[in-house]
Image (tube, one colour):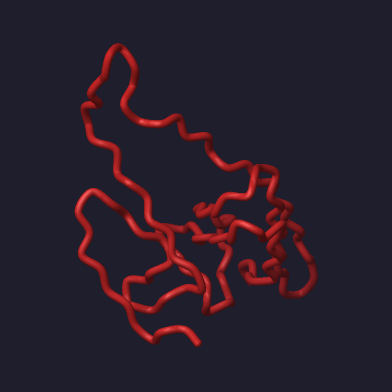
Length: 126
């Protein structure tokens, strides 16, 4: 059972999975915000090398009197938690209430063992 509400006070971190209204997703992920100036220690960068997760996004348009879009997101990288912002198509409207929308992007969270997500979630214009 998920908690109904959440709140944070973060300094130097950002959180994914917590909506502006306090609603929580099934998983939360924290990311450290990199400082503007990085210090070098003995000629080496003090921060570890981060490799961005790789995914393949397959979008299918179902055309008719009212068209819809279904999306499949397939993991191509190792078993890390993935949080990504996927842009919406022009005129696309998300119909799945559990998905978080910010600035015409859908927030996608994949657990470390999730191989793919199938999202039959949106309606096109008209």
